[in-house]
Amino acid sequence: MIEISGLTRYYGDLCALDHISLVIEKGNILGLLGPNGAGKTTALRIITGYLSPTSGTVTAKGISVEEHPLEIKKMIGYLPESAPLYQDMLVYDYLNYIADIRRISPDGREGHIRTLADICGLNEVMHRSIHELSKGYKQRVGLAHAMMGDPEILVLDEPTSGLDPNQIVEIRDIIKKIGREKTVIVSTHILSEVEATCDRVVIINEGVIVADGSTEELKRSSESEYSLNLSLKGVALDDVKNLLAPVQGISGIEETGTDDGTHLFRVRCHTPEDIREQVYNAIKQKDWTLLEFGRESKSLEKIFRELTKEN
Image (cartoon, rainbow, N blue to C red; front, top):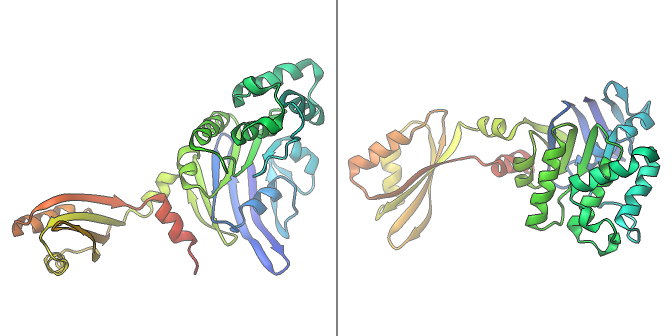
């Protein structure tokens, strides 16, 4: 559906995007993830035809964004981070106005607006002024705006920014519902958003793609690095280090806390093997009191931090 090849964008001497390439298939919700200033918004603006690249190409269904911008814009719905709404208009009048811009036929316009109101949960506020609405409802109006004309591609820049937890869940549900039939690109730096909503994750850092895959694939790629959390009663750090020194695959041991004689330890492991049995057997031979023992794999948050930290 969308093919990006060698996309590069400079602002003066600053390289915002550095030769990024990827293909986005229809029916996928792609999460474009990265820290502030990573190049996410620049990429979205180029995809939607708002900006021109310094070099590289973007095509949708084989049509070049640069050579045929109007054709591309007809098939794309775009919701920027701050929805550009006319605050003094009623919700219904605003959507009707957008339908005019999108050249929706008068014959089917009313039904189309009602369908969008159902999808986005706007039926209760259709005859209220936009300035009276909560941030969550304003985002819904912006989403209905982006979906006007039933575009094949939806581009959403920080769609849940500034919303409360209940509103975030509601917008997520709408996005997942839409994503069954359309190509959806969601730009965000909120990791829980990606895990809950997206089929695929592309992480950008300093204008470069540093990871690409599903959240499960990204987690599996780091399965050789994990931690074992131990809670032992009356045992010192040096004793644990000496006991576990012969176990292959342990890269470090540290004490993470103590509480009324109970010591907490993190055993860092760097091996594809599960060494919990070896660790447990070693502790059992010492007859130490083991209160807790668990494995902790890398979270998406930790993977993200490692991929996007400076240097």
